[in-house]
Amino acid sequence: MNEAGSRPGRALGLDIGGRRVGVAISDELGLIASPLMTIDLDREGVEGLVAIIKRYTPSVIVVGLPVTMRGQEGTQAAETRRFVESLRPHVQCPIVFWDERLTSSAAERLLTEAGVRRGRRRQLVDAVAAALLLQSYLDAQRAGHPPRKQSRRRMDNEP
Image (tube, rainbow, N blue to C red; front, side, top):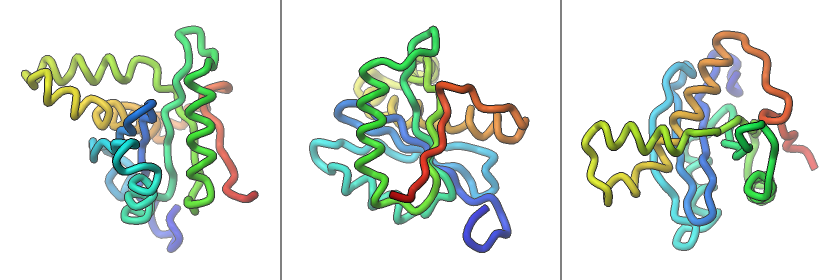
């Protein structure tokens, strides 16, 4: 629920990479995820992402956790967790990790099938991947599916 307790509120999805962060946002009912933008960390840094979080005031942030096909966390998952720790002081809502397996390849495939040219696909793929992982999370929440142990964890925002 949001602060007023009257509706679920928006969820923000993040697909965190080494140089870019794909950002997606849900509608206020938490039904549909849409690609929002891609943040270039070299140019905008964490500050750019924090500005987006403050602008949309999500009720939850869903972060794609890169796990192997066997569901194990590797070095990229550790990097993602470190990045999220740098966001934690700037965030007032829960942060949830969600399995992002195959979202980037699915996003690439969707954009290719839609006839999006290669240069434009590179600009869009991270945000579309964020929307796919956020939609997966929203669908699972509506269906009442329990979280997968190693791929979804709530992080308390308290020190």
